[in-house]
Image (cartoon, rainbow, N blue to C red):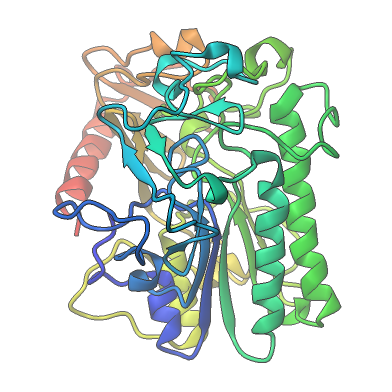
Length: 404
């Protein structure tokens, strides 16, 4: 697991003020410790419980990785003890067919990275044997997670609760339920978004039905910008047409461009937050300090974090957000301060679904952009404003060095 269990986390902090905490969905933050191989027949730890979740129902990593099973409170769901799971990312284990050895069994062609053990007609990253009774069916995943989320809400409606619902729909491989297939002209990717919309609606309706909506703060966000090819040939590139998944922004997932780092961030609290838009800079990291302020929780003084209390911004009582934020692309960091953005020299993107982005570089001087007038980051102002470059370059260096 990549989270230090000694560091404060959002669920752990909320538990100190009486919240019941739950995780449903994608995990991809690792499990166990590097010094001990995981035994999937036992309770897996450390995991979500050790970082503050009272309840967890999640996949082992991501939908495109083995083992293709669910874990509930640290245990593999539906595992037959006579059919133990073995997993290896370095070399093949077992004799299950792979996308490389038997591509005729695939329902969706994949690149070599995703062409190992086949589960449910889809090849994955890594090799897996055993656990036949526990393996998921991709098309049922959305319904499975929604049902678990609803049950968590209904079981805990009489007390404060925090639910982290990590949707899987937009992540590869995209295999929405048959009732959503063909819902859009964009293929599985568009259909998965429709399923995502449905799943969020089910959770909101559950809050309404149980008279909880007026007392529940909902945040909807994402972890990165879009990408049209990330391992599986699902028609994303071919069916995209003139659609711009990143809107007016340039680039996408893996890149240091705004299209890779700027994501949806919707805050809803019926009866408390008025509808509106904000151009303030905010980070998901700020939820830790903001929710602590909201609930009266206290962050440990001896454990520095990058989180800032932006509760007034999130609830519409203030307009000021962060002064700056460090943005992370693959192999490069950039920084925004107000309307200005600086990207150091180097490749802006290492991989992704748009070839022209893969070739882009900021050259030897780096790049400076004034986003209100240049949202697509096409006009490099570095030579025109060298003082601004120095300011942001030094700030980026200081912020990275300050990393707790």
